[in-house]
Length: 600
Image (cartoon, rainbow, N blue to C red):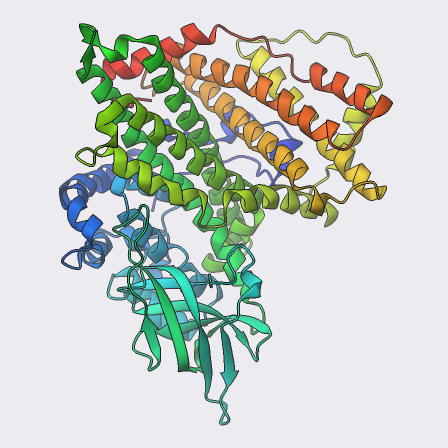
């Protein structure tokens, strides 16, 4: 596989908050090479020749369609694109895997079956399996012979995964474990051949175990009648005195949480890629309908209210996508750097996922909420027709909603974003104290006016000021906790304010880097003025949003002179000059309308 990363100094996880980057530091999808374009085209051909013509069969789970399509995807190498060659994989880098996943994003419920197979079903074995387990299962998972499922959630344990009650007790002869319990909301359960099950050995040691479908005592519940992703098999899985060989234990006994949480990091990232791929198709659907639908003797795409929706859809997607590809390059670089130090393939991928767990959590929120906004507005643009199951808008609307729930709810991911960042700082992996202290000193001074330089000088300055704003708020909240005045674990609203500020910043800087890079590129898909309109509209909205988020957080824990000083800081750090967003959005929308599809 050709090397397709952008080489640069590697930012640590979460370091975007305290270090500036340059356009050279990021990968943008416009610069994909011939090999990546070929992979993208192959995936799109498969999407429109094999998946979309069968979408109704997928919805009704007819003719064993999902597992059969997974087998066809395996023939094209899609199931092993991210896996080692020694097991039949292709070892594509994360940039290329992201391009592949995004291309398959419009596949509806089939993306769930696919994501489980390549992610939470396969990765536990790659990351934590013994050599014997890898040799036994990975080649057959990669070639589609075996299908897999991931069994974590129980009726009494969702976000609190460690509260699981399923248990496994060692047999008297020590040859196997006897498993009892139940799991729910298990994707792929109806056709899976192996299950990655989390159980408590002896009732207290949370552990991952591979359980084969034919094990006596393993039974399935009926297919769940769900709001969306109806084409995804979702069942309960019951274990009644199921005998599991001791050699099927994954990783260390009692360390199952390491498997569950580390596998979810990449699962969250890939959910973002699939979500944004689906979002692009949804925007194209909206644009085409807006051009075709006539009211008052003209296409409704001529109306400002519709153009606002189309433009805002594009802005949300483009910003999230910019952050996603920036992260894919970080993951790629980290893996290659670790391998150069002698770290093995699987361990390098695992450490990379751990390093950028903060970014993966943010992207899960960003991608799923961008998709939710986009499919909602696509349905709205369709009006009454959007509410009909005759078109695709209704199905996309229903299917999108689950993305904010699984792979950790978006609320959990917001809390994790801040929690993981602070833990990295406490462990010495990230210096937040120094930069936060510098911001506090700046608040006590009257710095001179810094005239921005260059074509994107004002935008670069705005992003730098956003970083100071977050450091000010987060630093003040941490200081309050150190002084015993608040307990942040009980102040989830503050943590979510900070998380939303971090997500906005990460998108804003990633978007800026992409637009700057495009300004010097010959690979632009539209005129640079469209990209500039996206950037400036996003920053205008982000400035107002960050001002409110910071204010809401500060007034909830500060008062008196401290609060007044901090609020002055909020004003100081949110001074990006607003642009005429009406004109900017019309510029963006017109590019989509002229192309009759999402064209950015």
